Figure 1 (spheres, rainbow, N blue to C red):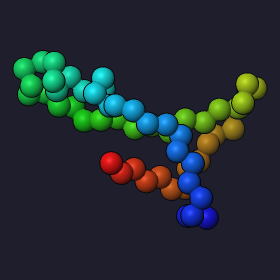
Figure 2: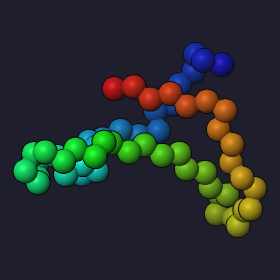
Figure 3: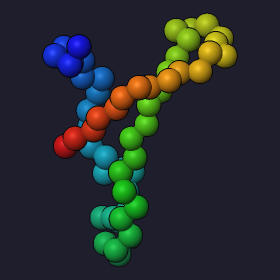
Length: 56
């Protein structure tokens, strides 16, 4: 509905990028992914996401 939001999680993305660890010159970008589950049951039904927004 665009008004009720659920925060699924948050945290540092530092471990996804070696920028601070290898010569400070190799930023590969942060990675965000969507995940779907069958809630403990085997499922072959694909998950379609109509919309996704990411901001920092």
